[in-house]
Image (cartoon, rainbow, N blue to C red; front, side, top):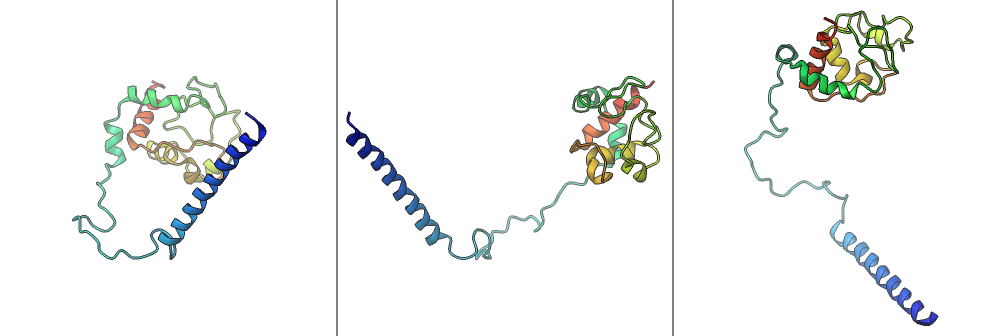
Amino acid sequence: MDTMTSTKILGGFCGAFLIFLLGKWAAEEIYHTGGGHGSEEQAYVIDTGEAEGGETEAAVPFEELLAAADPAKGERVWGKCRACHKVEDGVNGTGPHLYGVVGREVGSVPGFGYSGALVAVADVWSPENLQAFLENPKGYAPGTKMSFSGLKDAEDRANLIAWLDSIDG
């Protein structure tokens, strides 16, 4: 195979690709005139029987979730915290140790440098304060050093808090 043949083959592929791109551009111009997707009001709306915003189920109060929490499941959720925290008394990791954290004063682990943002939002790590912090640490205590994005499932938070409460006797 000589150089001229390979040049013709490469030119054919480039030409086909160019025609494909021009066809795509022309189709977008024809079918997407206006402000783009969703900028026009629908001409006909099908009534599905749902409210406009969609109905959501009523959330179960956290107290009920905590009462029904399973510490064994909380130990599995602990795997997400294990990289930075320890549960042995006095042994700090990247974060402070969590032995006896439920009911402990916020920012009270000796020898650990807290960010100060935590002390400003709560006095004691009650189950309610812990669940709010674990849901969204940066939202609960803006400026905290904790980079964890949070536990979105309320049952996981309740199970974890129940497990943390059970490990300190």
